[in-house]
Image 1 (cartoon, rainbow, N blue to C red):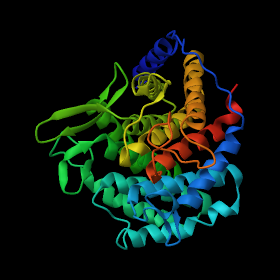
Image 2 (image 1 turned 90 degrees about the vertical axis):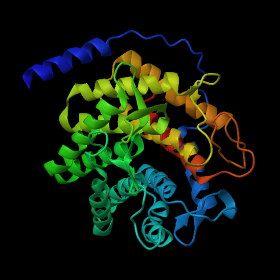
Image 3 (image 1 turned 90 degrees about the horizontal axis):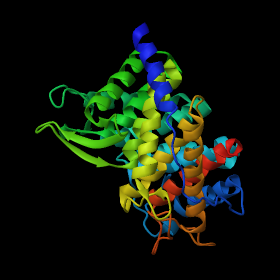
Length: 374
């Protein structure tokens, strides 16, 4: 164990001291503070998408009152972000309404055929519990966790969590990343070693199976029937693997997780981008429109950690701010304040909850990190 710790430290020093170039011409100025922008965007999201039945509609201004389970978790995460930033009860007033509403709209259950959908809602419920200490939220987290962990099977791909209950052979980054974050956070809450064991087990399986340690790329999935790996890289998967690395670093202090986090982040901000604007790329409508915001959530959590090499931190912070600046100055029109899947241009027509919540996560992340920006 001592040798492993020493090796991890050497690797961290070697990788952390690597010189990087950052020649992109940045202009980070915006008229408003990130706090002011976050308030405008988050408030608009609530007013534009909230359905009095207790959930967020698919599209803004009641134009599509349909319901999707997993985007609702991210929309509520934005409300939680706004509450934590302001402590304003106008945000916490939505907590219990949403808790009841999503259950009803999901068929009077919190369970779902998609394991990743359940994991996202569990992560949101855990945040609600940490704020309110209301046992109903934690009970729901445990209900979802106990169902989710049934996704692990050794029959296909040597382990890993399946993506769907009816496709146990499909082992996806989207079902393993959020689950390992959840396990790590449950450990931090309860100190139950079983959760930490699961967090490490899932992370290590994903690292061996769906991660390229030489580049920092996180691959999408492995088909356990053929052992073929889909090498598509998406900001969603980069973000959740990054999120677990950060959680495990906070718990263990092992700098190998910080090395992973640096590689994952660097790959994402140099390869998963719109090079013309040096921002995260458009990954499509629907589910894909949420992916960038997920990465940004865990990217900001990573930047909150000590021990990041100064040149990397400077590059990462510039990239974060540039995304916000482009999204605010190019990605929307005032006073409409719609956002689409591209942060470099306003949407044509209405705004989807996936795209809007993604942009709101970016601005809430910038607002929370604002005091640390030089």
